[in-house]
Length: 362
Image 1 (cartoon, rainbow, N blue to C red):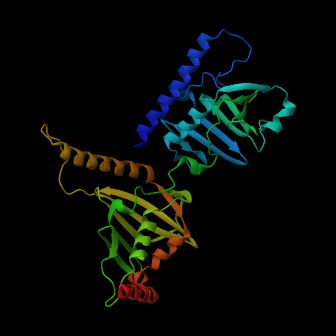
Image 2: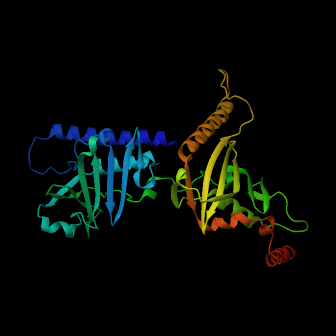
Image 3: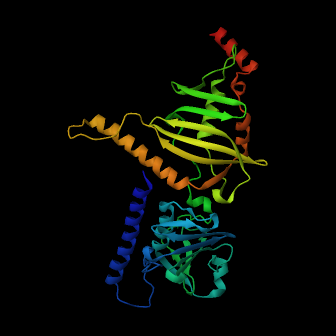
């Protein structure tokens, strides 16, 4: 499901929370007396929020609005995933108070709502960086029949126990990005290649497995080694994010190319600086069947194929929009890719002997 679809779902859920609050408030007489099931956060409009600050156990994250999206301030303005930002609004806006616990500040630390290390602090800021509201999420009540959490509005005295446990909210930037650079699994790809200082390697799909296109004469490849290599190439994970314009000392000397069944092609330039590995990524939609048009009498099967192609084309565009201008630090195990050759995929003599013995036994 695309990000925009997920965003719509989260916004609908949030609107339902807000509408429920107003319906509930209309039913209840205005009073200072606590009402079970009332919402802790009242009247927060997500569209008016320009900045979100979150903190827990020393981890901090700041998300700043840019148009309809939020950016991660600590990572040079890298885009945060919309559905994960919406989870913050949904979680904060959906907190229902099950019972009032205390108004005594001396009890705050014990319940984790004092704003200290055991507190999760969420602050929403509006235009001109004016603070709209702050929420402090504390400890989970011990020995309770179900998971319930202590909460308090920042600046308020009353501490409540929620009706439901609050969803975990990350205070690390990794919680607001897709840590994997490429989507899909090995079965979604049909070709792969690696160009490095040692030469060029081509990998082609044969059935459910990949194979080296040209092995050294007289040598047998180890299918597991090949599949492990391709799997590792596809499952690139982000360790850190750098702005490309601020990096000039990374040497990019190798390139991986991965082609999916849907004609989308991903090129990963591999670089290194010292003992760290880096990646710069781009994508292209390489469909050779001409313009994709839909006729009035198009069959259902044809429509499905063309829809898949259109989705792939849009995904490539979204991929390039997200990754353009960024360089990613990746696992240093990818440093081995700079000198990988076909010899790295030769079946070990021990494995070959074992396979031969098994074949003879059969």
